Length: 346
Image (cartoon, rainbow, N blue to C red):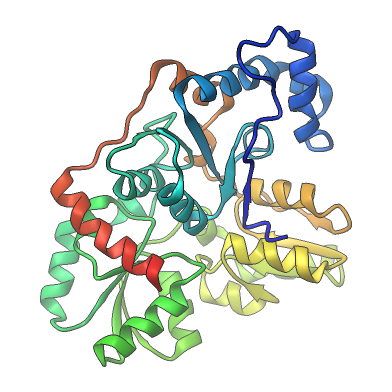
């Protein structure tokens, strides 16, 4: 099974009109998270989880959750889970009328760009991204003016306005393929790759293609160092070190494998290392460990403060009040959609 993307096509709960007692409903939902969340802790989540399942039915809604979400969301109420590429693909395919994005704002914007007629909600508008905040559309226009004829590859961790100035988008999972494809198409040997300077450096080292970069970085991944990896290897001899490509190049070089959250999940599920440490956001290890009980995980903890703004209670309030709706100017969305669709086609 590819753990980068999991889909629940049916709810485990009875329909909203059922008279099944609350305790029975809570028990059914707890079966999803048993082993990840103690029963006593789950009791504090149960009312929200039951309400979310009911509200999804009432509003024809679906919950998309990123791999960095906490277990009560990721395993408990999400209908589709995955990395940013998987969520973009599924957002485009869903027939639901309402999409609740349990992730950060740029992911909700991407879902809206691909689904202009649907209602897209984010439970907390403060769930931003250091990468998206690091660059503006004006910055991209200035880069293009300084480097005419060079294609712009933009990481999906950006605003709709930035995507609208872009030739093609990419994720950490498909960045190499996108960069190689566009350089062949344009007949060039360099690209403007924004805004993550570390992802650009790592893809440049892997492909040999010249990267014109921007000084942006993920506040979670840039904190890891090669010294950290040395400590992890000393603490757990034989551990497989898996790093996200948003980490600095010297961290990626010290790891055994580098890949997107989807790639890391697949590495664990397919290769089944006895011991592993994930050089990425905390909840990623929690969620993968639940699916791979035979692997022992060392869990360094760098939290994404933006992802953690999304809570079970927030998702419930979002569906109860139909807030916060994510809107994108149609003129911006149509241009940004081209860049996202080119990525999906690649």
